[in-house]
Each structure stands twice: as C-alpha cells, then as structure tokens.
Length: 351
Image (cartoon, rainbow, N blue to C red; front, side, top):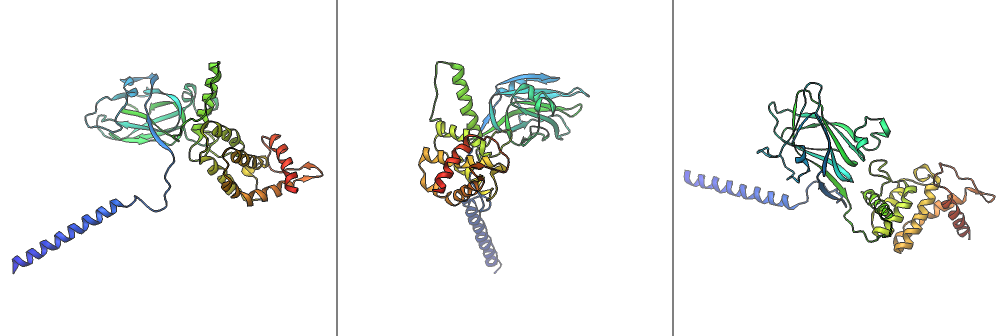
C-alpha cells in the first residue's frame, strides 16, 4: 500500500515537472515583452578607438583600448588599462574614434583592488578635441538636447552605457581620489540605417569630392528614427531643414521611409490652423517637400493621404493674402522661395 502511494506521488511529480517544462518552452516560443512594440530600423555597430590622442596623470597600457575586444568583462582580467589618481591629481585619457558617429559609449571594466565599489568618472563627448577639452559654456560647449558632458558611475567587473549624442572624440577623467580604475574596453555603440549609397559624385577636385561625401554622410547620420536636423542638436524634425536633407536623400539614397515618417510627424503634431514648428514658412516647405517627394518617387497613394490636410492648409494660406499681398503671421524663416512658389499655387487653388 505504501509503495503504491509512493509511486502515485512520483508519477504526480513527473507530470508536474513535464507540465512546467512545456509551459517554459511555450513561454520561450512567444515574443519577449508586451504587445506594444516597434522593431527598430537602426543597426547597432560597435566601434573601437583608432588612437589615444592625449593622456594625463598615471595611465598604463592606454594603447590597449584601440584593440578589438570581446565586449564582456572577464575573470582573467587580461588586457587591462589602468588609471590611478593620487589626491587631487586625476588620471585622464582622450580617445579618437576616427570618424563622426551617432550613438552611445560603452565601457567594460576590470577587477580593481578591494573594496569592490564603483568608480565615478567624467565623460565628455565631442566632435573635436577642443570641445572635449572645454568646460560647459566654453567655446559653445553645451548639454543642449543631448547630454555630452556628465558624470557616470562604473561597476566593478561590469559594463555601463551612456546616452546618445553625436561625437568622434571622448575624454574620460577618473574623479575619485586615491583610486584605481581598470578599463577593459571603451567602445562606441554606433546606430545608423544600413542602406546603400545609390548616388555618387566625382570631379577632378578632390577637396570638392570630400565636401560632397561629408554632406552625404551627415544626412545619413541624421536618418535615425526620424530625419533630424542634427545628431547632437537639435535632434528634432525641423521642416525647413528637411528640404535640403530630403533633396540629399532623393539624390544619394533614393526612397527611404524616414522621409514620409518625418513629414507625417510634422503634420500629425500640427493641427490646423497651427503652423509647423510655429513657423508659417515651414508649413509652406511641407507642401513643397510633398511635391518634390512625389515627383521623385511617384507614390500617388501616399500623396492622396495628405489631401484633407493640404486643402485645409492651402485655404489657410490663401486667407493670409489680402489685396495681392501676403500677410502671413507666425515666425518666418527660410522665406522667399516657398512664398513665391505658393503664391503661384494659390492661383491654381482658386481656379
């Protein structure tokens, strides 16, 4: 009798264990997290420094940071860069990532001597050496829109990542007094749209070729979740800035969903009778952008989606013309070209 009961208990436990395994497998088969998700259109790429530009204080093996790492803290604590501070004498290092990029900074640490507490560092991200060597407020250095000068706590034998900005150079200062910091890796987490360059430019003037390449690359970096005016600041969709950017996208990259997505953002966040970004001429540029986009890609379905807003906006603009003279309100930037074109379009609207 006791043996029968024992077998029944064993069978019950076996059934329970199998049920748990099945439930676990089902949970792994399901998408992670909730249902409100968007797959990012951006690629993440790890970029290592190309060189050490400058160092100060007691810094050992700094050149190791330019070597490709494994992205993981390791118990063998090999290939470590050591920064030591003594009293008020801090240790600092300045790294060059070789090219302007958009993204974050990731730091992987080693096993500094006990106690195994955190270390506090100051990080300065910048597009030039002079920027990362400056204090906030000097030479135009700011934390406007993207925090690029800040303190960060680093774990012992771990990993930390910063917020995003646009940068090429990074300065790191050990702020703790009489402390040792071990760095295993310092790498940039570059985020961008992995798209081909369909258009090109080549002339006999190499400097002009580089200017064209820089312009195309700048717009490429600005093609993040939306088409921004800049990767450091303002990181916003300014419709006036979109016009030269969209011209570049059309010429260099061809169709890309970041353009209609940004045009729709400007429309959806500006219910009439508002002006986009509070600027009347920016609403005019929005109309011109749709004209240019359609002429390049011929997407009539997308253009028809703008019909109600376009008609309402044109009616609003026509109402600002009195006795043949425009009386636009709101701020006015990048005027001239859109005003002339839209005065002609108003004539067509009236007809």
